[in-house]
Amino acid sequence: MPLTTRYAAPAMADHPLPAADVARDWLATMALIRRFEERAGEMYAKAKVGGFLHLAIGEEATIVGCGRALRDSDYLISTYRSHGHALVRGTPAQNVMAELFGRVDGVSRGRGGSMHMFDGARRFMGGYGIVGGNLPIAAGFALASDMLGTQDATLCTFGDGASNQGTFGETMNLAALWHLPVVFLVSNNQFGMGTALARHSAVTDLQVKGEGFGVPGMECDGMDVLDTHAVVTEALRMAREQRRPVLVEAITYRFRGHSMADPEEYRTKDQVQEWRARDPLLTFTARLEADGVLRDGEAAEIDAAAVAVVDAAVAFADASPHPAPESLYDDVYVLGDQVQGLYSVDTTKSAGPGPAGAPETGAVPQQMTAALEAGEEA
Image (tube, rainbow, N blue to C red):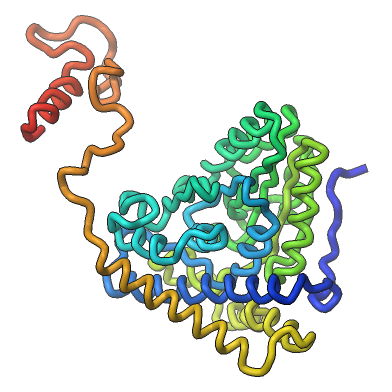
């Protein structure tokens, strides 16, 4: 019998709604993520944001559905498309925006930028720029929970492209072998950067890719916040109670390009419009209005409140100072004589005695350290 649960996603109307205040919170959070991402794109175009910028417009139901399935004590680890994950964990929008601006009031003090959000106090353990690089780290969090004997679970989100990385198989194997309480959620937005799923993965039913390692799979409609929440909640229950990893595939779509530098030549406008007809904010709003949860005009008020929060976030970020130049070496992991080593020495040459007068191994980094400690330019 296969491990995978073939989950036929029901229509949104078939899922019961949470309590009215909870449903409004979910919609408000989705609206905040949408408006935040739209404004982040505008700020990038105005050169307020440096580096890369990956927007999650269209994926709000996946983010909120899985985020609201977590306990406060659970761990969440994301990818470079991580602004929404920080927001869903409760990180103030102003600090997320300040990080995009590279300012000291950012969540990573302006040193991480778009791809490296982090909020340890809320157990959002970061966005990571390396595709698939967060998978083994997530297993580490789950291993810590297991060794400490807690009921804390870990949720690791990644894209469909990362399911082809070596870290995917390695992590699935160890997580199953060690019975770790971790849920791996692959956001299948149909493209690995600009490469369609069928062109980069021999197996396109991504929920089954963990079977060979002993990891059961489930599927959810990532455009439906109710379905995503229901499936991820069950996956987390299995991870917590049965002490086993679970792989969840969320079928979703991003309405914008892979990044702001993406010309989107790999898909047509008609394809994007077809998915936009299933806009998760519009469909969830319609459900709440149909069930009498929202009064007339309340959806517009929720959206206006989200815009106001983002306006304030931009103003806060713009007023926040840049990191001082003298703080460049703050929080550097190795700066001193703790490690005598090869981290700045050419190791491609064969070992053996060098020419007369050549510096010993480790001399270059130690000279740099001495200069910095003396206040000199390296």
